[in-house]
Length: 414
Image (cartoon, rainbow, N blue to C red; front, side):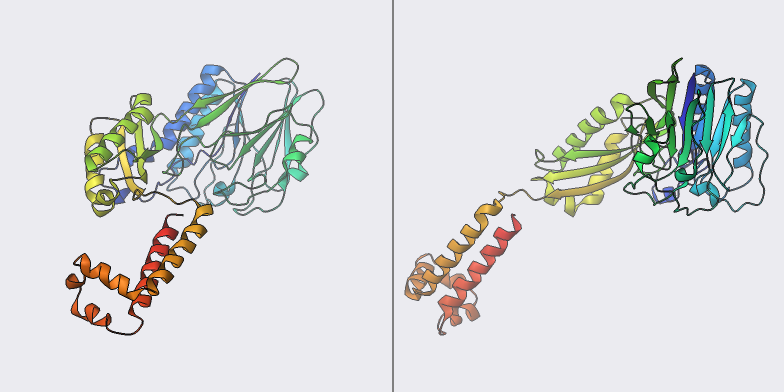
């Protein structure tokens, strides 16, 4: 038996903010979520799967118009023609949909109710699927606690939209304990809500986030898709395979180490090399590679980069034109000036030495004046500073000021 597990399709997600970026392939990116769903259906047909498992957030809140719903039902009908079942739950974004119109789903689709957990049992297929939809956008109860016991002699799947025990960057929805899922008696937990692929548990019981089917912004980088689950005759998971679906667009963050860059030209050369190695070598025909470039590290080029960021951005955009798939979404400079860093364990010793030398200078004003005069420095100072040499305590004030300045510089190197 083969099952195809996907989640967080976010069909027709608006991808707001693209208009701020000149040259952005906005329409191509906005259609990317549909392309990923097209690919999901094609994959299900090619693999002749028994069922498709959709773990919530099919939509991205309220539909722009009814065409969003019509598109989805059309794809489900394609699966019906191949006798492929679809088990789906609504997630937090689906529950946000305020459109009054609800389209009737094809009869191959099993949508779990939100009132309580329920089960669909298909003994002829050796499959039982359990789940519960979100009734409202914010669900803080442990829905999994109410899921029914496993059906004996069948492969049991739990369909759940959840943040599990918490994940960075994601809201706390339908939280639950991993141990409870593992001990519940199901063979596979098909999770949704977390947009990064994660095989949370694979020892006997498999607990899996497939990630979202299509990255939608610079925070959702890398390969996006679904998980193909193969179950052997004994009812054990035989294999899990990630399958890519994001053939229309993929987001990348390319961090470029600027340590070896001496100037702007060097920086651009390093960016060019990074784009080749990290992006264009894996380019796919027809796919937009949306790239955020981050220049990082201590570098001699730091001043050139931070004083002329627009020039650097334009140069990066220009060199990217050699790569048809690449669109530079943003260039960020996160470099620092090069310097010898002082280890923390030595700093206290250095500071003590500085203050000790300052005390010795303060006690020998005649010697300090001789040094300044002999080096020709006193004559180069402003008149108000030269006058201060006639005041009481001038050497002490100068030594203390120099010491404070040097200590501040040392502190910066920590």
